[in-house]
Image 1 (spheres, helix red, strand yellow):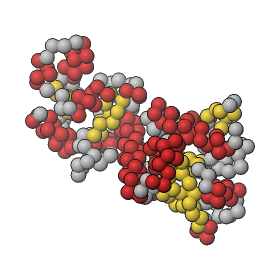
Image 2 (cartoon, helix red, strand yellow):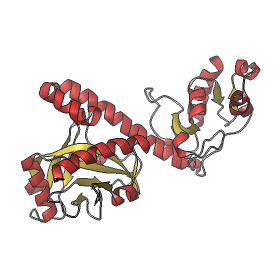
Image 3 (cartoon, one colour):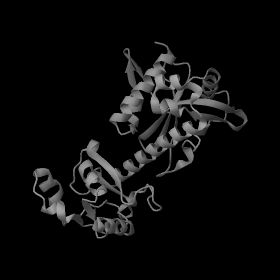
Image 4 (spheres, rainbow, N blue to C red):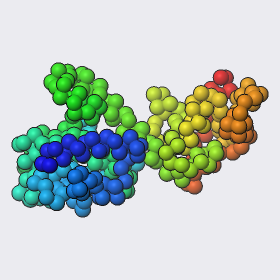
Length: 300
């Protein structure tokens, strides 16, 4: 199987894995790579521009961030990125590889580190411009492919106008920001539900105290709660609320209902309990935001 075919299979694999891992790729998974026809293809390595063994051109580029929500290495609002050469020699093999990708319009993957050892992936990206004197290239995402896949992307082709492409990219960007928010919130709460202590990662979500569409609804840990899926839904539906002093309250009509064990132990038993707070005080839920949200719960 040639390199181009492997790249297309890689994009399919990334799509499948992103649905399984919540769109976050552990470094170990990327370093181990994926297997196709008995051949192991590593996706990331010691250098930011990565060319697997046996490949003639890079398969991925990687950037890292130094802190939460540091967007300087992210794709811009237009879906592109200025990516620096390796070192200062324009003729280094890795830098030549980027220019070869550009000349042949060959796609690759962009991995952006959201925290040590964890990445979000964008694919396919293309090298669109070379700024050799500045030791950099311009990388551009194909949002139609990332949203719809190869078959639909080829079918739509150039018929997708810039406004639609930007709309698709905004949707992708929002999803990535929500992915980051989830990772930081879950880590702050030691990856457990703050109400019931459930520790199954695949059943945990990051709930906004104040919705992200509102003025103080930033995707930051003090505006988040780590909740299991049922408690997240109950919180968003104002079935349960959390007071500014971290006490869980259940809506009165729910307390009076008679149903099965889920209602009794999953919701009614939460009444009057105290949420499990993060270890670091700076990560504790913001009391002003909780107060605003709690008033909404009381009026529900």
